[in-house]
Image: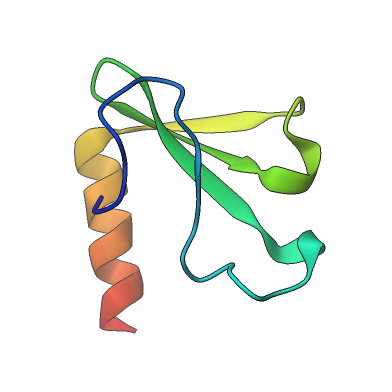
Length: 66
């Protein structure tokens, strides 16, 4: 969860999205108490997924492991 601010609703573009086309951008933010929000940056007013903090950490670890 490195790079996420502690202020709820402060969205950050994924470092893996930088330099790619607009259609591949993902944003993450602290959403609510111990929840991480994930949304498509091209549809910011659209749907958002919210994960418990531990579940998000597990997903990130899995992605890093390949």
